[in-house]
Image (cartoon, rainbow, N blue to C red; front, side):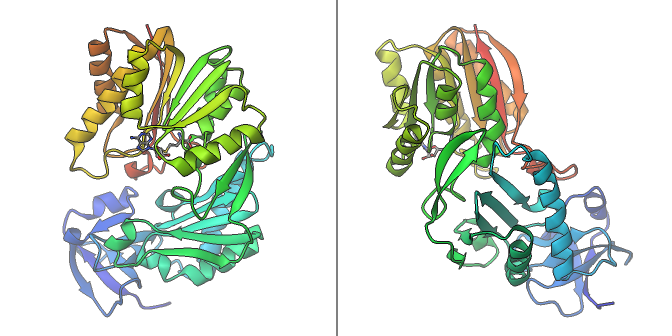
Length: 396
Ligand code: SAH
């Protein structure tokens, strides 16, 4: 058995680990015994020296250890990553057997017991993100395993994320396995979407909203729909395909709007969906001033709350758009409102909605309380894995 350096926890700090949380903060560590380079696997032990888990170590990050396995005897080698990725893939193959969708998250980092690794599949292409030093150091094995298991037509890296800085890593973008054009057409819920894995936001497309987009089906028949923060048209195009008579999508990004228009044409829905470049905060006010009304409004803003700080301003932002959207809805109109900020809890979100409804002079019924798509599993013991909230409300 390999002799790993040992990271001893302070007294009382083992409980979280035993309950399944994969993060050990630097401040929870009593001492490191034995030599360990940043990124090395270490053995985590309680304050009495009892082995608890294996994880990888980064003394330069606030999160000093990320747990890979709660079995201290497991070997962390290429085969370990093969088993883990296989286990993740098994779920997705079950979920997407019907072939109405060929784009999904293959690996959702900590929630798939692979801290710091994101793998998305877009038709024949894979997009990967190595978010931590520990994963970065294992990229060779991981890429090999992905090739063996999925035989992708190309692997593109999108490690251009802020969190890498906290790990002492540079951003890294480009082909790992050359795959020709970075623009692919994917199928989602039997609709087609262009995804640009090189220039798109995050890994190119927001897969976590797939099931929420599908849930529009019951509410949009003959409806006039407003899709705010429409990006490349996910919600808008679903709405039109499900029978909305008129859909307007708004996004501040010109390239996103351009691709959204192409997506409307791709699905032959351009007669019913239009997209405009606009700042949603301003556009909602203007629409209201003009006396426009909608049967259904979607709000899917970017994460306003990035950390525990800056909550105040973010709350105002959420309240503002939700209040305006409520005012724009016809009586009994439907509001589909989302937040992808983990630090903005569901309870807090509801409070904000309540305040907004009070100011708007409208009552709210919760029709659906939704989260992220199933290929973004929520790991019990790791609350950070449930980040996306989506309420479907009737606004009376
Ligand atoms: N609903 C989309 C995903 C939205 S991601 C989908 O289903 O795919 C958030 C989007 O908000 C991004 O496309 C970003 O360009 C846009 N955005 C950010 N700030 C904005 C603002 N003030 N007004 C309009 N769009 C904004």
